[in-house]
Image (tube, rainbow, N blue to C red; front, side):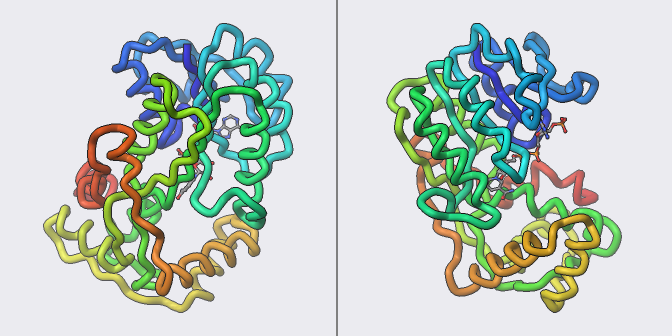
Length: 278
Ligand SMILES: NC(=O)c1ccc[n+]([C@@H]2O[C@H](COP(=O)([O-])OP(=O)(O)OC[C@H]3O[C@@H](n4cnc5c(N)ncnc54)[C@H](OP(=O)(O)O)[C@@H]3O)[C@@H](O)[C@H]2O)c1
């Protein structure tokens, strides 16, 4: 039995689907079972809130492995959650590129949870993922409405990763031995500027989609208006500015672990073309 948290999210939904296809027993931790109606059939749903460890009582009973996806921007409840999860054999934690060591700021919660996972006594594996291709869905409304993306830093380079590949590495680590103690830096297969990403979405849609460079302050105001804490907005913009001169690295971990090359950004855009108005 493998328990997946964040099971209705991008990576979690892929993980439960792949685990079911591999014939594994799956338990999905969800806050609201009504929102889990499109998860695959034949799996258990257990209600629980990662911010409220008391709500997880019994969730880990009979579980052999946990795919821990942490949707909260704080590690406050993590000591109790990881302590409860440490009764399992294998624990895979979805962390982020740059976490670990003394990384603080917006990565601080990942660094803190990595420490807990490493001390848990389980056969742990850390997935330090680079930027998700799914982040670019925040361009979807604008592309659907005007075939345009207004954003700063057209030349920031990322090696965006498909959620299917993140889930696939986690599923492999949960279902096969040999991944215990591994820290996997997982990325997509290529480094693309934001302008190239937008062009590739246009190629998939068969329309020209334009990238219009805007001042970072404008994006910051939009982030804050959308509810992002100002220091979080600043950190995201600083990270993108830095990716102009220091692109995200490209690794071959997806292929090494799963035996299949990581999906390209164009493949991801094809899989999500409907969300961009295709
Ligand atoms: N975006 C990136 O570029 C990037 C890069 C590296 C790492 N990451 C990490 O990836 C993780 C997010 O993965 P994702 O994008 O697949 O998630 P997501 O699509 O944002 O989904 C979040 C999931 O968490 C659930 N959830 C939210 N609050 C919860 C709570 N209090 N208790 C239990 N479940 C809760 C949501 O379920 P309901 O709302 O249905 O309850 C949903 O299933 C984060 O830890 C992030 O830091 C992201």
